[in-house]
Image 1 (cartoon, rainbow, N blue to C red):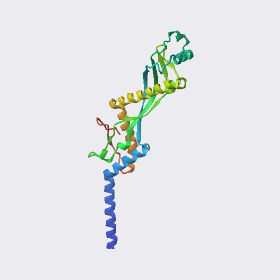
Image 2: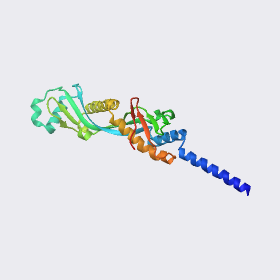
Image 3: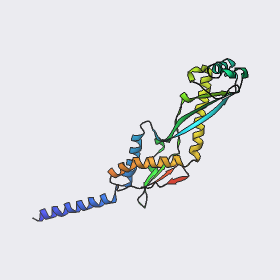
Length: 229
């Protein structure tokens, strides 16, 4: 009888301890592991995309070595025959194209020291700085302009190979440079990243035993975000 009572007391104590531990939530180590695992699973290629930006760039190519009069003449014959008398050999030419650039951060730069449960119960996460992931020009909307014409819609396949290679290389470089400047200064990409991370981590932390997890997310070195909800 006493053994049964003693056993019941032990079971009761163990249940109480277990309930107390559950109410306290997961340990810092478990939170760190849950955050890292969740982010890594969402980024199998080691880069987590957290947003996109629509961009339009214009680049100038000055070399007559690439922009031959015969090519400009061909374009004008196809689109604006009336402009042919205005043609000047070796004219300066611009290329304009819209596109989409995706951004995010390299998950390999994230380690446990950047994740912690703070005194107020918030999960603090410090993310690496944002960077460009991919550049996707909308080549179907590419336009070319020379001193002899206005803007002309051109398919890349209509461009001489040397022109196409030089122009598209310059366009992609301009996309990347423009977005990198915006990522360094604009608030919205950081906000988008914080919201994306919050939506990703909340279900995983709830499954790990954290009730209604709240977050304080630092993106880069300058901005601290505490998303609502």
